[in-house]
Length: 170
Ligand code: AMP
Image (cartoon, rainbow, N blue to C red; front, side):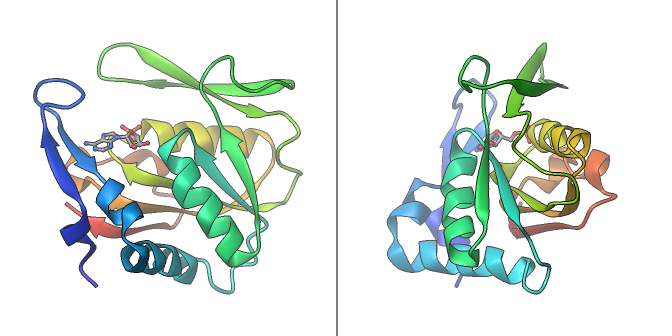
């Protein structure tokens, strides 16, 4: 199945010069959705994953669906002020300035096998922040998985010590 048929380019969104990859047609189509989650699941077959980690908010779609499909748990990574319990954080670079993501401090137990996911990897900042927090909590990072990788932005550079899978590459 060619998932590129279910990804729509939106020019100049959210700001001028960005081509936004809109995955909503993919989530809408039951066969494309099933194929996406099945393919993600094939990346972690036999890896004994305990937890899927996903960042707000598009990472929740792929993350919770994958967790259900692979009989694992799901850990949400969130933006400032959203998690109610004690948190740890990681700050990462944006094009202009920085952003910070949070995870509950008891989200991961030492040596849990975790798989980090998102709908898309662009510069890799979000993925790096998830890696950093997972490492802080002592997780064993089995790898990272993305539906889409914008390879020309070289987002995998800072996380290349871990296995990285993406279904579609631009
Ligand atoms: P980054 O931290 O730069 O790797 O950006 C990854 C996050 O931003 C993901 O959660 C994506 O949903 C979103 N994102 C960044 N760039 C794009 C893009 N061109 N199209 C769609 N989503 C994007």
